[in-house]
Amino acid sequence: MFFSTSTIAALCAPFFVASVTAAPVSRDANHNQPAASGSSSNSVTMQVLQFANVLEQLETQFYTQGIAKFQTADFTNAGFTNAQVPIEQLTVIVGDEQAHATALASAIQALGGQPITSCSFNFGSVLTDVPTMASAARLVENVGVSAYLGAAGLVADPQILTAAASILTIEARHQTMLNVLNNGNAIPQSFDMALTPAEVLTIAGPFISGCELGITPNAALAITNTGTVSIGTLLTFSSDAINGVDPSTLTCQMLVGGQATALAFPLSNCVVPSGVDGIVYIYITNNGQPLANDPTIRDNGSVVAGPTAAFIDSQPQTIDALIRTPSNVAAGSAQTTTINPAAATTLASAAATTTAGAVQTPPPAAGPATVIGTPDLGTTPAAQPTPPPAAPPVNVGGTSAPAAPGPASVLGFQPSK
Image (cartoon, rainbow, N blue to C red):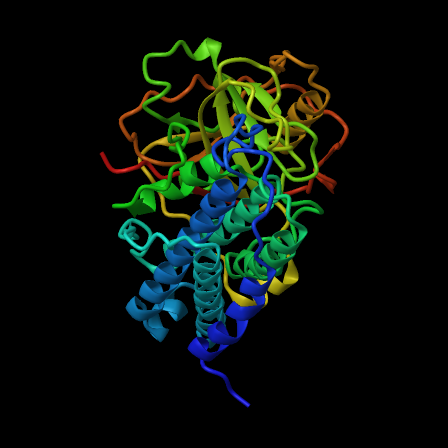
């Protein structure tokens, strides 16, 4: 028997609504900090549900527009061995997102509220071609998983948490599929990362306009590297929040799954260390105190900008080649500096043992190799790092450094002025 998307959504909504009660909530939705005295737990529950509903609307609109815009030949030209594979999966995913949005809207109304329906979504920057759409879809799904995980710290009622978890597990399946469709590791880490609503909006905000969400995002951060970015690559950034700030006072922090704290480096030596695979959330902070992976204690007042996200695909799998031929990286007019994997291993080892308040500075060694990168985007790149000597392999996030790291997909969007 076949059910339409609208029928599935109608069937799912009562389950979610039946799970919703007026729940006690102990933290505010901006930074996962304890809620102010006397603040309404019901209002925070409402804000969490409304924000989740907006994110599901965003996902629904993104996939609807992408599927409508691109034809079978576009997917074939993007390297897919069978264009029907991504088309079928994206069609299933958009149906799921529609069902989630409908269920959340019904739950909001059951609590006496109204869904936020005034948002406009602009995907012009990421629906330029199929490869860019696929990369953006991967970002959307990974951030969606992080958003639901972060919301778990805001809601105390077990019925609402169970209902939300029934969405989270589906988003995680989407995440896995989009990892594969982008030639990445299907399950790159043993643990996912949670983001606060403010951090989620920092990444997703450039796509959203015309509505008030009651959430204040951090300053936007964009990675200016493009092309082949891999283990050992020096990352450079753009953000209004770091313009005119002495780079020596700033720290680059990489949050990866399975680590209690972020990997912290001086901004001028923000090099991707070995052992990293999959999504990395990157922040710029004003001190070297490593940020906590736990979002309920992460906000220590040091974040200057971010997070932004990068995908480091260092461990490609056999299934990737069966679905899509890895695309060639387009040449640019500028250079990205990359150190060798052994040197990057030393960085990972140093960062993993960073003590509170300390930032690791790599010792000098042989010069770096050069690969093609991105044209100048109007910002001054950080100083080039001097690579350290080789060291034995170490683990970051539960994975071992590969012998030959692959490229990364980097997505850092700047909000419209």
